[in-house]
Length: 114
Image 1 (cartoon, one colour):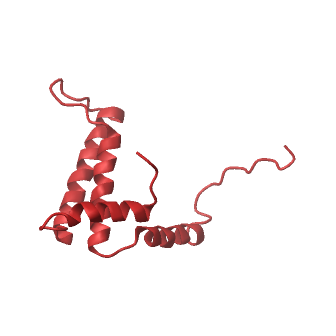
Image 2 (spheres, one colour; image 1 turned 120 degrees about the vertical axis):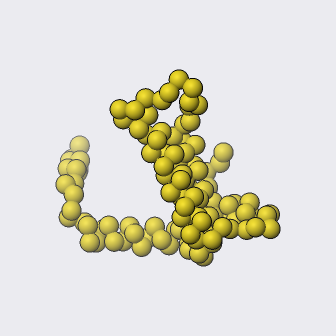
């Protein structure tokens, strides 16, 4: 699949949802779906990195697929509330780069003479 901007992803999801009479779910229903998808991702992470191996009869699900499911629902949620995710990320990055700029230990910058 080709690379897409966030705006392109939001438009693609909107085109997909727009073909159905039901449209977007209510915000509360989407929050429940988001929680469900996050739970599925958590389960996958626990199987790969945690102490809980899969049962022999459980299907292998890639974390990539679970992250994709979660991203889809997040985009649906944003679209239904008319939130531009590019703008939302800009707001968050500004916050991290101002309020939290000295919160973490920075890596040493490479010597400019090298």
